[in-house]
Amino acid sequence: MKNHFEALYQRHTELKARFQTAKAANDTEAMEQVRAERKALDESIEAEGSAFARIYDLYESAKDRGNEHIDICECYDYRDEGSLITCLRELGIEAFTFSSRWSSAVESAWTFTKLGCTLMGMVEINSQTTNWDGDGYEKCHAYLFKIQ
Image 1 (tube, one colour):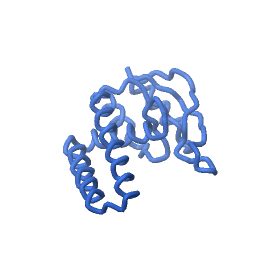
Image 2: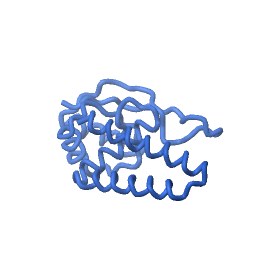
Image 3: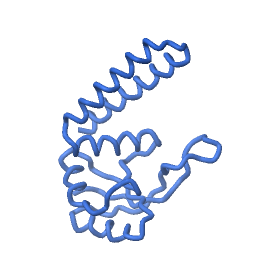
Image 4: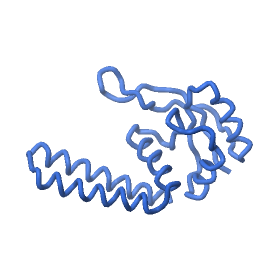
């Protein structure tokens, strides 16, 4: 499944590059073509189901930031850890990081272990916050979980 995610990510990356090239050339026709292709790709992802789309969004975010694993952070609704882990398992994801700063983060981490995930340690990842100069991402610390 990760190979499928990677193929989708590469397609998104290629479309972004084509759009930037068309934009730089002020080629509105090419820009519209890329927009249509991107819309079709996004619709194909949505057609895979909401769980697939949710996990793909996390995959895309991790890749964009240069992280090795999907990262669960402040953008996730922590009331549904069971559904998240089930989705990750079904989609063949073997590990993820958890970098939440919410006060209930330790409770979510505990729930992940109760759901069969193993806490492998802590790692440094690229956060969602860009550096002040726009060059790269601020670092943050995250729990690394292996999905059993």
